[in-house]
Length: 396
Image 1: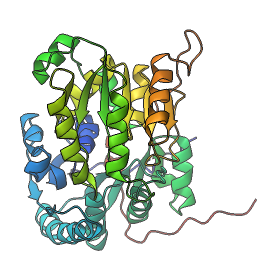
Image 2: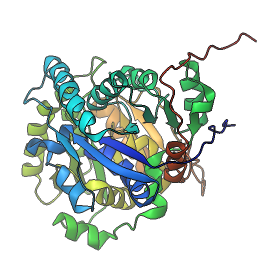
Image 3: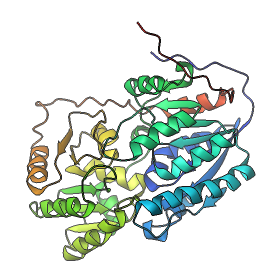
């Protein structure tokens, strides 16, 4: 059971929302709309990371096309593929975000998730005594340094909107006061109720690629902690797809983590070698992505969306390797090793729907998509005290 946040008189608030990647922006879309339309709140957008990079599709343009004003844009990505480059990008982010936040003067900064761009924004805001509302804290992904970043952002934040009750309890375990932690469900599921998705013909037209066979949606990101070579694992995935020649493939680019740029040439060559069967795209955007998921035979890769959003469509996920290790998942999420035999056998099992009983509805552990308004109410009831007391657990 959630403990309600303390109420207070609502005054107008400047709400800065940070976004650094296409996936994160897609999850935030309806929250941005709700903040934008609330008479007591003023939306400010701080955009950075992959959004500003031509290498990853300059997805800030999609934000503008959706009717949002970008108040501050901070470029931080280096043309690098190393841990040193990532660390330097965090440093560049802190410098740029300090100037941006000084200009914006937010009453609260909203940050989703666990990426290094968000980590830089959170450090900056904490040092400037700007309260942070963190979304999707308390989760575990043991195969990526995102795990440590997520928990660090939790400790830098003041309010917490978690995706299920187990995650809420974990945030409290990290010393956060229960009255500042609320289980609101996964924010990405808001699209299921509020977004008009495309039919298969509309999706084909939008992609300029004819989908006339069953197809897979494939997204693979580098694993940043475990001993799992991005090139070797991704090549095993591509080799596995060759075993299913009757299935088309929508293949999205990896994110900007170190190792991601090693995958891109392999992805592009695979699409060139299979022009009628494979469509590679830098960014689908949330509407096309969810539309593709809705019509897909399976989602394959190691993205968190395969665990959090995909099961609500009753579409199986083939989750490869250790990147998402530790996440709570529905039965339709099928884990496999990053090698051809394991991937192929798991895809076959997914296509046969062997993971569920006849007619069984897969239970979704991340809510049903009623999240954005709950977060808006958390923002409006915020009464910030920069002295944050560590919440100790009392022995039973």
